Length: 166
Image (cartoon, rainbow, N blue to C red; front, side):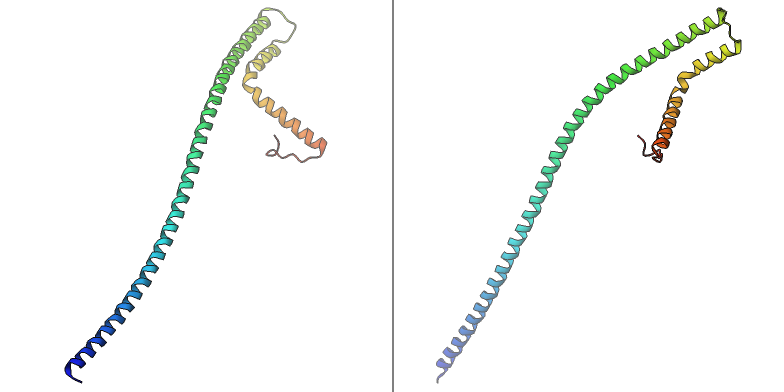
């Protein structure tokens, strides 16, 4: 064999080796590209699920805020109506309070001026008791309610528990 044939054969071997290396590199590149494409697709799918979850949460929050705003508006209307009624009751209560003390002043006048066959100290005690009654009425009523509940629990043999009673 001459030098040209040896050189041609070595070039052919080099070309074959280069083709093999190129094919192996091409296969590795294709495999890595396929893996990267799969990972990218998985990542896109995961991010799509993530963003769709966020969109669902945002829609839910938006709906809740809208309903809350509507409820607040309704509750504001109700409370403003109740406030009007409460103010009316307060005015009515004040008038009754003043009327009561006007009545008490008249009763005191009757006791002081008109001769009633009653001891002076009993008349003073009645006027003082009637004067203090508006301030003690709530406590007296609560005591009567407590007494009523105790008697009912005793008669019906149900143990009285203050927290449970309504």
